[in-house]
Amino acid sequence: MFHKEGYKIISVAIVLFLGINAASYVAIQVDEWIIAIFSVTLIFLILILQFFRNPKRHTEINDTTIVAPVDGKVVVIEEVFEKEYFKENRLQVSIFMSPVNVHVTRHPINGEVVLSKYHPGKYLVAWHPKASEENERTTVVIKNNSVEILYRQIAGALAKRIVNYAKEGEKVIQGSDSGFIKFGSRVDVFLPIGTDLNVSLNQKVKGGESIIANV
Image (tube, rainbow, N blue to C red; front, side, top):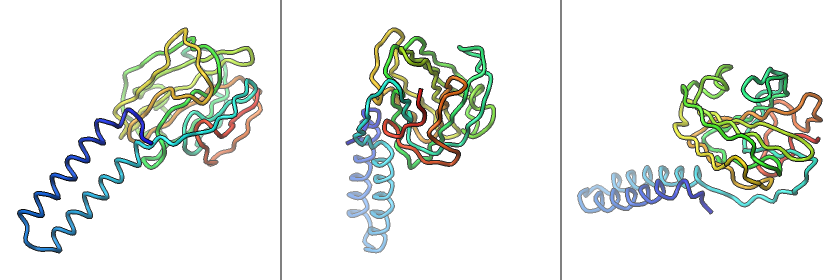
């Protein structure tokens, strides 16, 4: 199963794969070169397909838990001042996605979207300390009866397009699709101080399934 954001790129990749290999078969008489071209283009096609994969995730919906919004590795756990929306100290949990991770973004909790905002910006490497404030990013805040959280999709040096489906006033379901980031980046989640965390640094998590905190 593939994410809808990849349909156009996958179609182009398949056409190129077939066209290049058909041309090489006709124009090149050396079997070794034909095999080499086929192998390189096949690897390229497989990389495109795996990047846009969208595996089904089984979210145990619970208003007292916060699930990871993306696949990846926890690279930051620290108390910071969140100045865009809360304007107070919050517990930041950052998850870094490599190009081989699933890049679907999922809603961490049930609730109402009270803020959804796009910010143009730079393309610093995703682990740069200033990436959260200076890179291209989107900010989404969701609120329910148990908690109000902010999560931020952040573009990286390779990620040149962030897709965000969250709309203000919309009711969302925990674990459902909220967007996509192309070609590696990170997502920051800002939780209330004192939140009971369920993850540690360098831990790998699965979007929509791994519980990162309890409220």
